[in-house]
Image 1: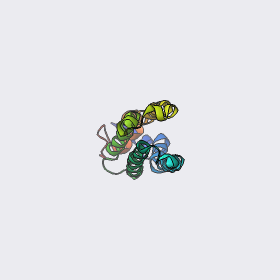
Image 2 (image 1 turned 135 degrees about the horizontal axis):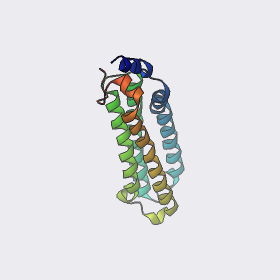
Image 3 (image 1 turned 90 degrees about the horizontal axis):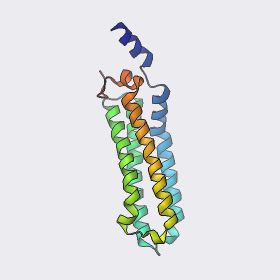
Image 4 (image 1 turned 135 degrees about the vertical axis):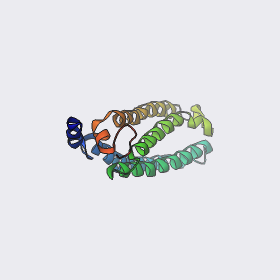
Length: 161
């Protein structure tokens, strides 16, 4: 029991990789998503009249990205503040990012954007989405296996003791 308490003291707190995750979720991911949203919207805006499917794609993607930006900041702040259920919230956010990245592979076809209208974009987008799915997967695994997460938030439930 004494060894367990020493381990809890050693690993307790928002430090190390847990701090990196908090910074990513609270600052870096939302900022990069916002910049990407603005850049993609500005780059594709001249083509909206020619291709209504492109407008629908950007609109749906923008709404989803905005929701994920807000969810990311909420999850990051929850972890940073060591709030109750913070780990569960972060896991749900990471799962949402994974699922949205998976959905994004099929979203152009769903909104009626043909591959013929942007074949290079379709291939690049699929590869980017697959790579993007690795990011939440790795952080999710970190939340499950980290000694610091267990010591800071308690047990495997993600709730504070």
